[in-house]
Length: 266
Image (cartoon, rainbow, N blue to C red):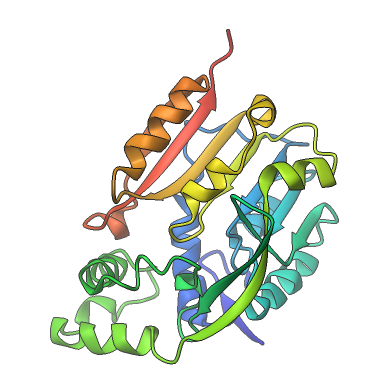
């Protein structure tokens, strides 16, 4: 298992060092002023990957409860290691995904770019979207990546092909969030974070009506294809949330949107 040095000098366990550093840049966008996180909050992290979001939360707050979910074994092992290194005893990890049913589903794991791993593979199926994401990521790379903008654009397709080569198909367990809420006797969710590479709609549809009452805030990456953003936006507004959207600068040209929602207090 490798280790990467993040922008603040801290160490994180990872599979791909460069990806871990880029993930921190991406996660920073989730700490938007629209969302309020405080001590003793309960956070649900769906699509936790190697746990960067949980690590950042554990640095910022002395007492915060995190439920982190990652279905793919190779990635989960790193998530577990990072949760332990965080020294946050309330950073809990679970080796299954969250969807709209309980059971099993086939995922595709990309060893050279674990963050692209998914059961949907929507992003990797579009070379155009991948190229836009790579271009944006290199343009908005961590400061220590002084070399990023020196890479010739004709090299980009070769980088993409390397990132997604030799995928591994794997069967993973999945559960609905409502099942998890009942199983773990969760009484409040101060922030629901969803970043699961195209499976966000299934996550939303797997929440029963009564469980929406305990979800105060949401931050979600939405792949806006086939009217998905419009559907999720309308659903959240009808459930009593106010919604804000932003674009991650590194993903400006892609279909990916950051959605923030918070329950309106009447």
